[in-house]
Each structure stands twice: as structure tokens, then as C-alpha cells.
Figure (cartoon, each protein chain N blue to C red):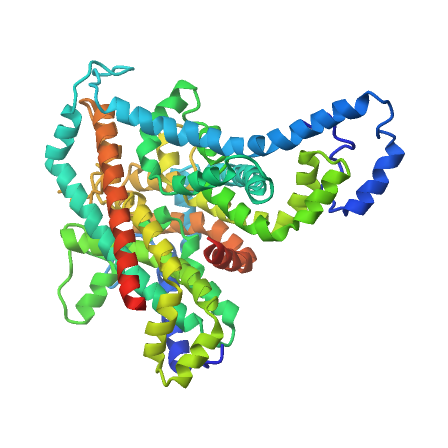
Length: 343
Length: 276
């Protein structure tokens, strides 16, 4: 591809104007010197123009094929087979048995509701608070960039680290949250054994890490709203809240849609936080699977003894369908609400 | 930008910041008191003087420095690869005309919605068969190029390079790859820096894939080392001071990076949002 490169790429990093390069080419004497060469060079150059774009985008599609598409299809294939004990490859076909097993597994059902519960407790409040924080940031603040940075701070804490921090904050006996509740005269909450409480604790880790990040995304959309829209709203006598409802929200709906759909896809795959929140070493998400999520279920099934991979594969495909369905529902719902809101 | 915020907005933002910073602060507090004090009611609120003691215990339990080195290597190499291949593909989608380019970029965007968990188990088997399980390469390879990276670079380069510049270079007889190096790369530099930074943080904080592929090997990243710290024999669970000291140690490198680069991070998120 670089065979007919006129010069080496050693000076490639220098931004050179076309004029400069034109001057540099001539002294090298690699111009059309023999009569036969131009046609060959021309053909080569045409080939270069035609093929290069495909070569440039090829790595992405290769990587996607190897780490995304093939494993996905193979997962689907595997989900219809058995797996011999300590075997290296799959056994005979079993039809839909693995799917039936997973769907009838009470642990799977629990994991499904846990995942949805944690997801609702994290994405809903997160987007509402992020929008409000973005509205605060979208004012004529003193030290504007400092405030923007300040909301992003939790983003540097990896989910694994966040889980260990919140695991201690929400510790049943010695945690700070229970101490606070005690000081307020309230009962201590069993964050690691009560099902709903554990969802709240796990959702709070997610909210803590991502609210500021999403606030910045929403802020960017708010800043793109033409300022004269606000001026005419003020002239029409709109108050702050009316202005926010009728000018800001309709203008940022595409970004809201983006934030909602991405947080759906990410939120339903939650794994790290509940796994490290666990206080026993079985990694089953609480003694009674109170906060085992679907991704944890897939992970644990792959490490179990009977038909590990095929069952995990079936569970993975069910998870995939759940995510696609909920993301789609969210997408349509958000769009419908926004349509009505903007009218 | 005509609205001037009152004290209320400053107060609310300050409260939000306090909520953001407090868990990190408290983690340091717990990591700096003795093992006994950490679990004594009421929970401590000011740092003690035992952080280095706890840090030493972390170093005894897990191979912290090798995990740190692995995290740096894995994140750095992944970031470099993602930046290179994403810029190449993003440039092609933004500036080169080729048949099927529109359909292909739509496909790239759609792959962003594919839940990756689905692919992990066969992927693990693929890597084991290749003898890659338990190696740094296994952590890096899925990060050669990302859909987000390709899309991000495309969005940036569409406006960043005038078409005339490319045409002029071609009239001059430049090869395509040379135009990429001399025209596209210099123009793409700001976006490349942001993409590199984000990829670095993403790989650094990733947990599930390294956990799977490094299971039972000596090679660990900081995140999986934290998991090991938790399940280490000898009351890892009840020793909160140890866990929080480890958490702080694992967070400090990224915190330093954040302090050095927060301007790029903030503008990167905001740019990606407007264009994406």
C-alpha cells in the first residue's frame, strides 16, 4: 500500500501544506521520468484510492467479528447442546431444554427481578438528578469549569473500588449509614440481607458514579439551545420552571434519548457492584440471592457443574433479549412522552 | 447565559459536590485507622495515622505493584491501539468516498447497543484455546478498536479537515496513507488525546473481562486484585481498614490522572454529547 509513497513517513507528523509538499517532491526526482511508468503509477494510485478506505475500516469489522459476532452466534449454537462433565467440547443436542431449565430456575427469576429493580432505582433517579444538576450548571456561574469538574469526580473511582467503599458505608453493623439512621432515631437497615435495601445500596453506587457524567452530557445539550429562545420565553412572561419545561426540555430531547438508552443497556448488565457488595464468598449475590443480577447468573452458571456453558449460553441469550426489549420500550416511551410534551 | 444564579444554586452544587467527594474521603478515613477502630461504633469520621500500616498489609496480601504495572501497561497499550485504529477508520468514514460507507457507519453505531456480556463465555474459550488466558494480551485484544472510538473520530474529523486539503494532497501525488499521516493525524490530534484518555480510564476500570480471563493466573489488574484482596484468606471481609486502604491505593493513580487532565475530560464528554 505504501509501495509508491514518494517520501518516507518519517516526517509524517509534521502538518505540511500541499504547496510545501509539491516543492519537496521535485528534487527527489521520483516524478514521471520514464514514459512507461506513469500509467503503472496511475493504475497503482487509482487502486490505492479505491482500496484504502476499506483497509482503514477493516480492523473494526475484524475485531467485531472475532470478539462480538462470532461469540454471539456461537453462544446461540451452544445453548442447544449438553456439556459432558469435565468435557472439553459440547455433547449431544438437547433442543430448548437449556432455555426451559433457565426459565424455570427460581434463582434466574430472582435475578431477573433483582436486575430490573436495581436498574429502575439507578437509572430513574440518576437521569432526573442529572438533568437538575445540568440546569444548575447551565447558569452564569462563577468558576464554571471548576464546578463542571467537581461533578465528575466520582467517575475516577472504578466500579470495583466504589463497591468496596459503599459496601463499608452500608455495612449492616458498623456502617456509617446505619449510624446516621441511629442518630436520627430510626431503625438500622439490613442493607446486605433485605432485598429492597440491598437494591437501594447497589443503585446508589451506580448513581454516585454516573450522575455527574450524565449531567455534563445533558449540560452540553442545554448549551446548544439557542439563547434567543429563552429571551422570547422571558418576553412571553414565562417563569423559570415554565421556561425549563417548554424551552429547555423539548430542545434537549435527542440527548435525553441517548442518555436513557445507553443507561438502559449499561444498567441491565450490572455485575461488578453487586458482586463486590457481597459479604459471603459464594458470589451468589447475598445468602438468598437477594441481589444476584442476570449477568452474575450467567457468570455463575458458567462455573457450575451440570451443563455449565450451554446453560450460561441460554441465560446470556435471554439476557440479550431482555436488554433489547427494555431498551426498545424505553426508546419508544421516551419518544412518545417527548412528542406529547413538545406539543 | 444571562441568568445569574443565586446563592441557592451555589449551595446546592456545593452539596452535590460534598456528596460526590464524601465516599472517597470516608474510604480514606477507614483506610487510615486500625483494624479494630474501623469496626467500632461509632464509625470514625477523621483520618487516623495508620494508613501506611494498612498499606503494608495490602502489599503483603496481594502483589499490588505488579497489578499496578499490569493496569498501566494494559490500559496504555489498549488506549494507543484504539486511538490509532479508530482514527484510521473514523477518517475513512468522515472524508473518503467509498461504496457502502453509509451503511457501514450505521452498522458501527448499532454494534454499540450489543450487550457484550453475551459474548464473554465463548470469547473466553477462544482465548483459552489460543493459549492467551491469563496473559496481558488477552485483556488488551478486545480493545483494539471500539465502535465508540470510530464514531467519535468520524464526528470530529468531518468538520476538522477541509476537503480541499485532501484533494490538493492527492493532486500532488500523495498516497492515501501519506495523506492520512500528514493531513488527518495532525488535524485529529485533540480528539485523539480525548479518546485515548477515555479509553485508558475505561480499560483501567474494567472488571468483568479481566476477572474472567485472568482467573487463577498470576497476572492481575488493580481491579481484579481488589477482588482478591476481598476474598484473601484471613478475614478479608471483616478487615475493612485493609479493604479501604487497598481501594484508596488503587484509586490514587486515576485520581492523579484526573487532576492532570480534567479539562480534557470535561470537554470530551461535552463534545461527544453534542456530536453523538
